Image (tube, rainbow, N blue to C red; front, side, top):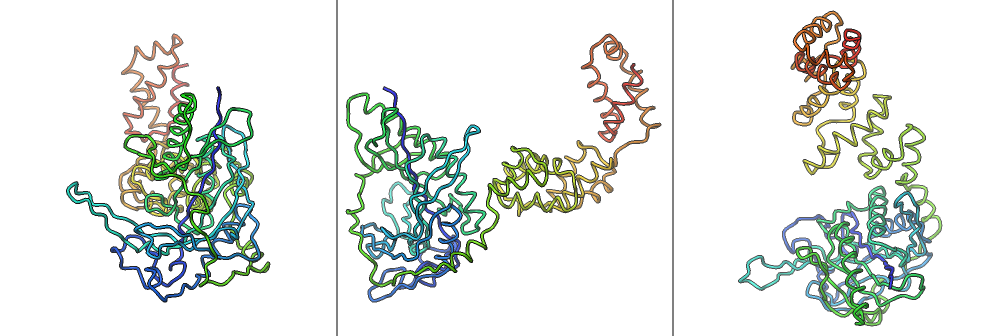
Length: 477
């Protein structure tokens, strides 16, 4: 029997507010354990939470950006469960009255556009973190409560996702939107963006839902994709063997590339939700929503469309440049000093992207400013240096932070474009290579590349390649 997967994703986004959701403790990452805590986030008796308005503002922005309806009234609930790093024994979250609902985002896969519905966006506090000893003789785990009370948004999709590849694209698209909103750094390694997946399978063509499993512990988008692929195969095998898929929570084991059972899956009633008595109802007036809507930045899809129209970029270039807001900003800053937009795009998607990947840095930490890159590409355009030399100059710029003109001047890299001098060098190369010259005259066109290479070698890469090709052809025909 042929089966199809039915997938829904729950994404937790840590907000970049300066303080926690219900107290004034810092949210900075990397502090010593338990140094960013107070009686409120420690859950001590008698304390009262106070809602951080910036968290609500971030939630409204997100809801609007993913086409949700922002409700006029919402409340917080207590979600009761025991876990060692949950100091109160419950989490303050939202249940049946979330801030945003009934939204959607679009994904693009294999040239086709699909709309994935968003069930809800709600606010909640994070739990702490368990630190497990790396010493095999020490089985103890320690609790760091710095993260307890850090503000989160939970974004829940409808089960509209039909493959691991669609899940990956959904996460990429959602992450782009969140980064453009500048409400989170979306750093999965630091836990700023986390994803749980609910997955079931059903016979192709049926509308009912199968028994679902929840997948956790996936620390990358590729990890989500791999975990879903494994779970689809596991569930198919289970059903084909006439066994029953159990509703449970499973963990993704990255070392073994498989999911493993963790516990039976909880239902909403297991958490005994009830309204949080220490927090008042949140009233969100239309004026607040309208002001927030007007303040939204240009979002990824709108920017892609504008870059194609304004700069004549291809679909591919616009897609790559807008994957990251900082890179899109860098591109547009470069256009202030150079009008060859395609050349700028090629350098950013090529040489610059390679440096960022190899050095594991973002473009804000690149030693080459947009103005400096524009100056370098201008030297190629006006014939001062060749494209090959420009690549070497760029590497020097990355290492030293110097301007292109300074490096070119100090190293004597100005392109050789004097026709008389080039004719002399080309005559010399022709005399030194009689066989390749004869082969070319007999019709072996690929020999021309060899001769050009010899000329470039003789001039240490400084010869103007277009002029070299022109003169060489004139000499050989």
